[in-house]
Length: 233
Image (tube, rainbow, N blue to C red; front, side, top):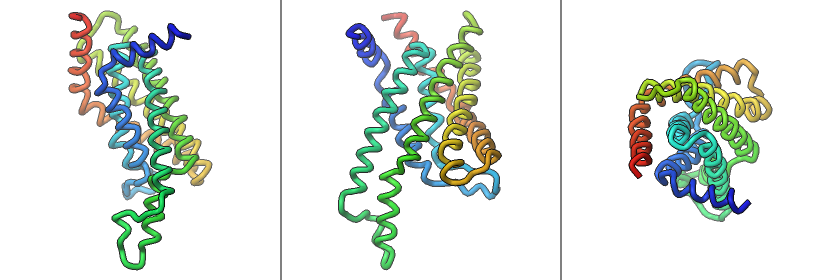
């Protein structure tokens, strides 16, 4: 046990803090923004603003997996989940504190708006449960699929290999994330059909993959700098 704790602490010291910070920011941000749906104008297409942040989680996982392995990335996923749950608890406690949100000062609607804002930040237990399960499932899928593709590529390196690993693992993991959340939350609590669940999971994964493609050159440069620093240390 002491050895495992020591290795865990060593890993936390090794992984650049900025990657951990970005991952925490991403999961907290996407859970908050998931409260706002996107009006796509298409009945069967259900999306929320959480997609603006979710891709960032998987990009950081791709970088950490390539530089430190899927095990380290998965352990960090649990750490990040724990920090997110801590933030959710703080938001929940803040929602219970008597007071008035600045945006609620609308004559005649103060109580309604204030309650809505408290509920938004306070969260709902099944939303937090669904997002937590979906996050861990998708993180494991992303990390080990990314590593498996890397092993298949053998000694081949460069942006092409990084992109292949990132694009495939991100798309599959994002689909798994969206689908697990939809099946746990949307289907059971909002009455979504299976078609809506699969459609939302697929379209969300496609859009999140687009973000990954756009920012993958940046992710590649970061991973190369980390690997180069490790080789010269």
